[in-house]
Length: 386
Ligand code: NZQ
Ligand code: ZN
Image (cartoon, rainbow, N blue to C red):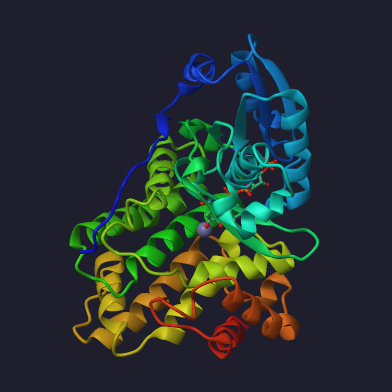
């Protein structure tokens, strides 16, 4: 098991009605709040009203309209608001996109220069405004991690900043806030959780037994409750289990003792950077294709364990079990309504070469991934996604 440091400074308040703590908690950071949100779902489902109800003693500035796959231009707008109005704290109400844009704004507000500089060189981040979150979709784990993924509108580069300054100080996770999620977003969220766990689980180091078993618990939770949350959107048991699975799925707990570069996310970030597709949809298409491509005498043992533990595959031969596990994963994604090919979402092969070169240039997949991937490998995986 690798050595590790583990510190998460985020205060999680989980459960129905936890919004009641917002005013008291937020006032620890000041009274001038930038409230950030997406395209308006929070106004339709009443979360916006509940949040404003908590903010009567605060001076509230607003930045709405943060899109999925959030763009640098909205970060620049938010940074301006913070600088001109001496904002004390940013309150992100939404999912990964709103939280990530808010994290980037929080860092850029404390930096004299172009916010994109911070994405290209995270060492330039020397401080950030405090961030609080009211989570409305469970997928990314951004509510308890220090990553933010931003797309540069001009170049289509979709890159991550990752620095401890970006941990939210507070995250309110109320499973009832997930009741209004469209099925596609619930499903894409389930895939994203699954993919985060798989990226951490499939690594050469298999001595971190405890971490692997925790990962399996999170994956079983996704399988058990993903479909249920779609069939019964107001099922609290399903929503709450998935919500906590997403937080644990990417708060570093499932990396400890393991480590190594991720494989599928760097490729998906290029797809959603080029084509603005839903992150979880891209992952649903890519993940089984990547597994098929990298299945070999080295990976077959972990893939077989995955198949046996997660999908109860009972084949004794590792290669056969591994293949059956990949089929089960495909079937699972299909069962929750995810597409299985790029052509289904309108993507043809015309940019595969450019996408592959971008994926290799902007990540470590060719250096220390589970199975190292060069441009030709990425093109082959994209071709498998048809
Ligand atoms: O914009 P609104 O109107 O709010 O609608 C959103 C959006 O259309 C809707 N939604 C959210 N909560 C809802 C709701 N609709 C009805 N009821 C609710 N309660 O859902 C749509 C998707 O929201 P978004 O925030 O984009 O989803 P998600 O949380 O999946 O975030 C995706 C972004 O996070 C990045 C992805 O690449 C993508 O840009 N990631 C961030 C990571 C991180 N920070 O650690 C890691 C991930 O791997 C990922 O890359
Ligand atoms: Zn993800």
